[in-house]
Image (cartoon, rainbow, N blue to C red; front, top):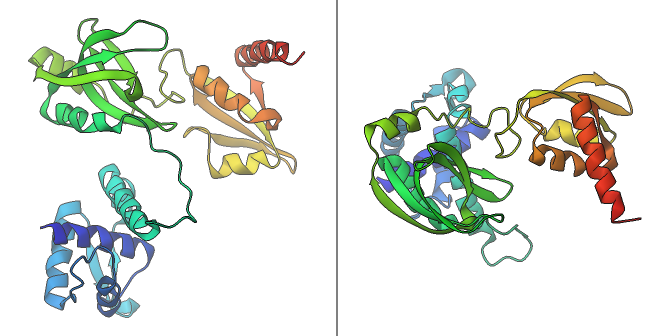
Length: 299
């Protein structure tokens, strides 16, 4: 079964890049890192694996006779909108990359996000609807023990965050994994808590947030990015809501809809003098206060 799955991910990755004939697929599979045994791919095996891929990921892979009998993915949008499959493809790429660069000193990587060893029991708790007992130490308070309902996790700024419900306080909480001192699986969630957990939608929870802070009210924020930073912000937007509202040869004006939290202010300051907040006044005023405090260090 593992060969089926490995081939499926490999085939999807290949066909997303380029339509390929059976002969091309067979030749590339022969030398693929995912082909652990190095066996040749018979046409019968290919068709069996292809059907498995279609069933597994709910896609259609067809032979286009008008295009030199090359196989193509018919509904690429399904893949682009399938977050599970996107993660599988990313994992496949990273695994392949790890093998390619093993023992090579010409690739420099950032350090991994801390406390990833907590992810496995957290995933198990989420999947099986089990509560967690967490000993947590924030930077501002003494360590505490929390009875917690985990809903989902998020990776942000090289940190993993756990989102769910503090069952003792009946309140939503966001915990950074590196601040967890200890974590154990507890007990099955009662029906009333399970209903509250099911109300948490991971896809929309941070929709108007920048980072992992959810407090505050979302509002329209206009910024001006000067050349060349405007080009960088077009390539990698600050937020999914970012839109261009005006443009000249020297700058681009963007509008975003989000909560102007600490994380967002920090991100704006990280753009140095290349980005200016145009509106609203409340955000401009907060930035002025921060900058005045910073000036004290350099006067």
